[in-house]
Image 1: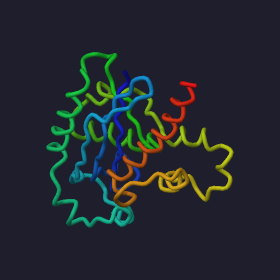
Image 2: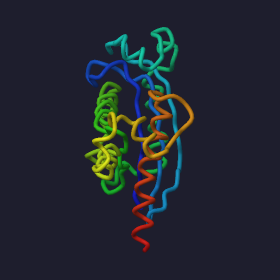
Image 3: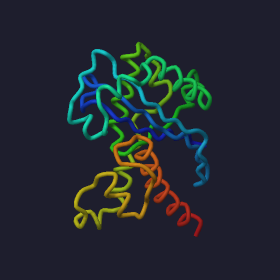
Length: 198
């Protein structure tokens, strides 16, 4: 069995060291023999750290105001809740028991989450997740090589629409983005599973 943790973050900018996280959403999914089961979901809104820079354009993309984000819970409280979830499904003391950190353009989310753990003075990120991250963008690109030239871009929403995958909510909401990312992943893994059974 392999353990996937689909994660998407919304942030106050593009630099994980300078900017902060304001939303973390995810789904923990177990996979065995091309059968995938959602084990647990989470969706947290949180304040950036006081030393995090806030880019006005990033907030505009997220549809948030500074007043809103500073009404959210503090990062350390969210970390405690997230770790409780992660601990339910892996043994961080067992180096063979880790999640595959799974996302769309996954390195962005991976780097932000890894730095966010550090900012929270917690060094256990690598005890929960394998390196490198599992990037659904690369999975989609490999499978859409012959169609890429006709697509206007390769953003998450564009690829999902191309594959007739939808989810309730707006793009740039972490929960919606996780559902679309998982939908793309499942699309290709279901196809592969069916082919392997022939």
